[in-house]
Image 1 (cartoon, rainbow, N blue to C red):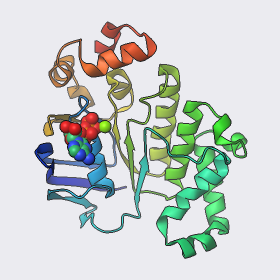
Image 2: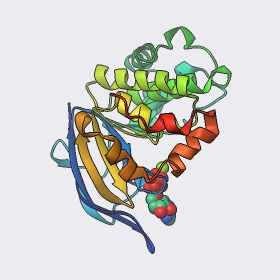
Image 3: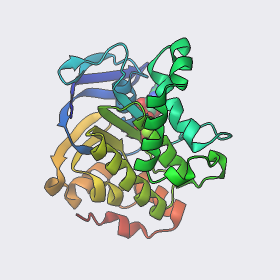
Amino acid sequence: MSTLRVENLTKTYGDVTALRDVSFEIEDEFVVLLGQSGAGKSTMLRCINGLTEPTSGEIYLDGEPLSGSRPTVGMIFQQHNLVEGVSAYLNALTGALDRATLIESLFQWNDRADKLRALEALETVGLLDEAHQRVSRMSGGQQQRVGIARALVQDPDLLLADEPVASLDPASAETVMRYLKKAATVHEATALVSLHQVNVAAHFGERFVGLRDGRLAFDIGRDELTQERVDDLYGDVETVALAERHAVDGSPAVEDRRVRP
Ligand SMILES: Nc1ncnc2c1ncn2[C@@H]1O[C@H](COP(=O)(O)OP(=O)(O)O)[C@@H](O)[C@H]1O
Ligand SMILES: [Mg+2]
């Protein structure tokens, strides 16, 4: 169980301000980060996991500033960054390597506890029976579940995911999100997941942080996610995000406007 507090976070790239004075706090929840393409979602996640240095502001996990190493943050990418030629099990196990220096890692590779953790993580995402399957033979959805398992091996307090289902068909996206939410629950991890599919967000999110042009647009609970808020964030029906999904899977754009509980 952890509390993530983002305080007055600003990030500029030269003339571009990707995040402007963003503050919010989340705790023990499955939180969806919403916003149009370019709103600053990836920058936010990268600042939290340490891949990017904020220009100003501070990020706290359980009251401690998140600077230097971040052993308790697990990250899942849109491009899952798996080693395609080896098994799901070995990919999951590489999650353990992130924690230590290479020499230590080589010892940990043979660490029985890590091996068990890798298998346990694959079980959490429903892939224990596929543990020895080569990742290159798996579907996109299964590969993303291996990516989740890899993040779980680090036993993170905070689980971050940047558009984890962006390249999947709607059915696979639902499955992956279901396992991601289960993973967060099993590990009692606070999750912050960026999504541009509003329907998927509304289905799985417990709290919603909206970004618009790098500014905090809203920080709201389930009941407050109204169609008006979504329209406000994404503009009209012809938004980039919705048009994108329409183009990918041919689903009617109007369907995407309905926010279901
Ligand atoms: N490494 C970078 N260098 C310069 N500009 C960047 C970089 N990363 C992101 N940006 C800019 O910052 C803004 C926010 O981008 P990003 O965080 O990727 O948004 P999102 O993930 O919501 O699509 C955009 O204008 C983008 O072009
Ligand atoms: Mg992004």
